[in-house]
Structure formats: C-alpha cells, structure tokens
Image 1: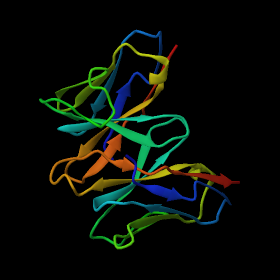
Image 2: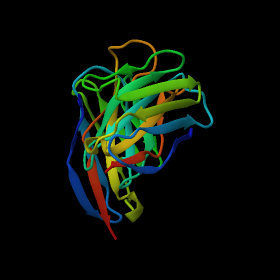
Image 3: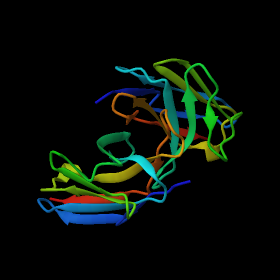
Image 4: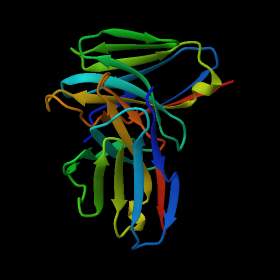
Length: 115
Length: 115
C-alpha cells in the first residue's frame, strides 16, 4: 500500500522561480528517495537522503528530511522549463531488516514550469 | 548513475496471449530487482521482488501465476504476463538496487496494451 503523500498534487510556476514539494510518510524508514518522471517515461533518480541525515544538496536540488514529523521536502531552485515533470518521493522502510527492499511511492506532484 | 534497460519499450497484444518483458542491469549486478506497475495518472505500485536464484516475492493482491518472474542471473530479470487481459494494460517498470549506495535505479518502462 502507498504510504507517501505528496503535496501539492500539481504546481505551476514561472521559469526562474523556486518550486517546493512536500512528502509525508507513515512508517519508520531507512532512507527516502526523490525521483522525476517525464510523461510516459521511466524514473530518473534525483537524490537519496538517509534517515540519519537532515538535509542534502545536489545542484539546484535541496532535500530536507524530518523523521520526527515523517516528512520530506524537495526544493528546486531557479526552475527551468525542462524541470516540467512529475516528482515522486519513495521510501525504503526499516521493518524488513537487511537486504534490498521495494520502494513505497507517494502519489506524486505534477510540476509545470511556464516559460 | 547506474543503468537499467527494459525490452520491449512498448507492446500491443491480443487478449489471452502472454507477454515477456526483460529487465537488465547494464553496469552493476543486482541480486534483487523489483517490478512495479503504474496506471495512467497514478503512482508506482510494487508488484514483486525478484531474487536471483530463488522464487520471487509477490505483494498482496498480485497473482503469482499470472505474473511469472524469473531472475536467471545477476543482471537479468523477466516478467511474463500470462493470458493477458485488457485490465493488465499498464506501464510496467523494473528496478535494481546498487547495493553500494542503496540507490534504486529504474528502467525506462514497458507500456503494455492488451486489446
């Protein structure tokens, strides 16, 4: 079952502005990952943040994680038209112990950057 | 990042036929690979975990006799949709975990349309 909830569901901003998306989850996690998906295409991995990390940067991306609130945010700075896509958070829960686990995805935020 | 490929990219088949989808990790070995399904405008749902050399683990509600998974090597997993029906039409995406980084890398997806 899905445990992640992103908000907003959809967001439209002007090119150059910053875009912030939020994700909440329900269980304890090992890590949280953000992915981008262009329409009808596969997923592109953006960033992974571990449960013991609070903030991580990668280029124009900034991710925060608050395990006490079971929430994460993805900030895209200086947005570009090419950033138009759906963005998903996905969690790797900590219940199953060692080994690789399937991810639980949120519902996604559809981001539209207007030129 | 690591690369995962899928074949075919899209397939159209008649109801009642079987379709095989291949998933390959191209530059890393994946003892565990995952199969997800995504319906239009929805998020990804984990179907099953494919384990090299052993039986796949299916999520609740996923019929193991309908979705046959074979993980023949550390770089190849296959999903066979048996006796496909129109309701099986979906976007099927596989992934493999780079166990050094815990990052899950996704294939480009296979769009299945059952007539």
